[in-house]
Amino acid sequence: MSGATADEPRRALVVLAPGPLTTVQDLGRRRHSHLGVGRSGAADRGALRLANRLLANPEGAACLEVTLGGLKVRAAGDLLVALTGAPCPATVTDARGRVRGVGHASVERLPDGATLRLGVPPRGLRTYLAVRGGIDVPEVLGSRATDLLSGLGPARPAAGSVLPVGPAPAAFPAADLAPVPGPESGVLMLDVIPGPRHDWFTPGALAALCAEPYEVTPHSDRVGMRLRGPHLERARDGELPSEGMVLGALQVPPSGQPTLFLADHPVTGGYPVIAVVRDHHVDRAAQARPGQHVRFRLADGHRFH
Image (tube, rainbow, N blue to C red; front, side, top):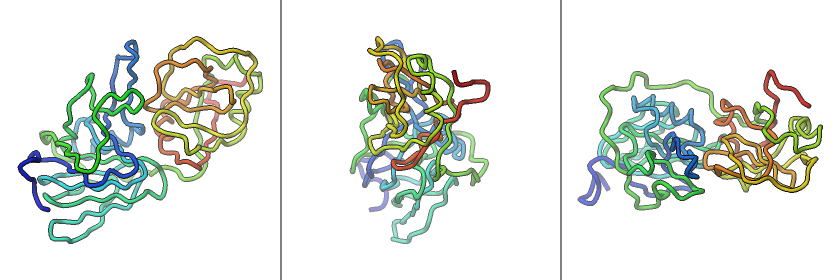
């Protein structure tokens, strides 16, 4: 089918298949934690910013966050798009059925009626699809991000969803390619600092956290990365009253197996936080796949107690 129908906006992405998990994301909601509303937003913030910079969008314009590929969309109107994050095989089929490959971290034309299909990335977890003008769905509390924990924001795109595209910005893209490294496929090294409750653990627990790799389990999601590895032993019994949680917190339930909080993490929690991943490595963590291993390294200036 070529072009927009009477029911479709003049410029839009029409979802033909959403893949395993596709959500609309921007840089999230700010200054609402006191209301119990988390920031949410892109799990890999750097990838979203890069996609928008390539298209001369504002850096926080809404994009599609695509987990493990599988997305298929059709252009209503001529569009410019960019893919960043986890590199995946991508093809464009135009209205005449001609197929071409699509580059990664580059500016690509998606003509009216053309279909873009994303395959499964060989490494990394989350791919970002930006369109010049941004995904123009309604804001909720100042953001277009979908928070899967609270249910705030636009619904997850499904087959048949029409995602309007906003007006193109005045500036034009200044580069057509960003030669940036992709997500790592081996053991992922993440810098941490001691958490606010590391004293709830035995003296060797923080060293144990950093001594051996942890496996990313299939139960991980946008809320948290659930890990399997060395047991982190408590020195104190009981649980805390709920207290504030931050992005990157490593919370440890009674199982002794840590959970790394990601974009849709709760704003409060009652399990002690042994360490916090440094902000500059949270985006890296968001690209870790189930079965991949991560290691934690105490950041410079901190020491084991």
